[in-house]
Length: 491
Image 1 (tube, rainbow, N blue to C red):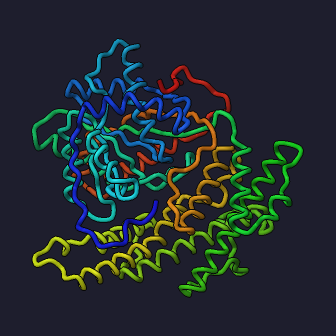
Image 2 (cartoon, rainbow, N blue to C red; image 1 turned 135 degrees about the horizontal axis):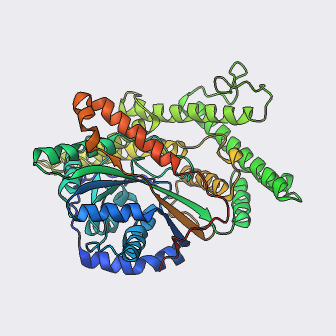
Image 3 (tube, one colour; image 1 turned 90 degrees about the vertical axis):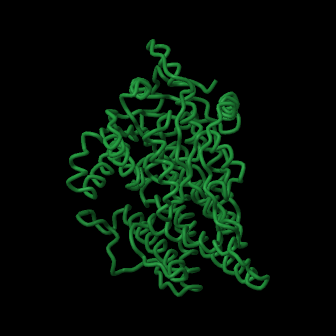
């Protein structure tokens, strides 16, 4: 995404959920065409839809409140969730002879920042679809109250992404934020305080994508383009495709790794030169292997371990540049630090004093604009880290599938766009895809209430860990060509 407008603006307003069934019906009609022709999602396979059908039946009968906790690997996920709720689940319910209340839909939590870079109309649409926004970098009391109320009292279940944002990787689950677990316990508390008997559960939902036909030609074209933009034209001839599929894959990997290493070296040089970060491409005194790895230092995986170590150092240096400017402590995970930086930037762009009395003078407003411009420039470093936070040095090497190649190439493409000051979205489409949605087993929050009363922090951490394990168990790749009786095309 691009940074918000660098001019000082009034504070961000809360966009209240205002579900409009007319808007819902209109978008529901358009969804299949949008998915097939615009997003190239040709098939959606749903594994274990019966679990969601029965849970919705229990919700409709007043037996259960539930939060749908979905994986968020791609910007395409909302369309797949809509297909699940509007098409696949009602179809399966009819097959089972179960009548569900209409509309089959869910409220959802979204990042308040999305309308800032996607357009204000997105906030209007999300509101009419029953979405409720939250600002991720602070304790957003109004946003939390709205989400808590929908989970406890809404006429529909609530959906949210516990990863907090999409990470660009179908087969990696980012560390989960504890907010989803905490909301589940708040809902259990609300049930008890209101004397209600509904059970509270969290339902994990896995989402993954696979190409119907591996888009190797498109990937080769993007590798060519990225090499040219990085001044690496010679790699196109050095890594000409081999005679066998294995040789071609190895040569593509060589190009991809060389491109990533070159870009990493450029960024290290940039932070060294401009900010004095003292990053070093190599350090002979450091063993790049993880602790306990008995392989020799000359093993081929050494470079990948070194790449990851260098990338982590680069991300830390980039965040330190911004944290120093905003006077923020470097506390927590990389994602935690990104959230605090984002909020600090927003506070300098979306200002409370612009709606004060008396209003700012023309000179004061000019200075506020300069401060907003500086904040937006600093937030650029944070956007780079958000783009890299799920990258490892071995993701493609471990399983060199078309999907992993494509995800990594698109991350490099997004990075180049950000460096050039361009908006990386929407991403180019490489080829038709199949989405696979896996409905997991419900995790009871109500059964954990005694643990929560005894130790709230520990109970939230344990529930978050169990949800993480459940989502990770659903990303094991299916064998190529595997089919399911629940695979359907958007229609």
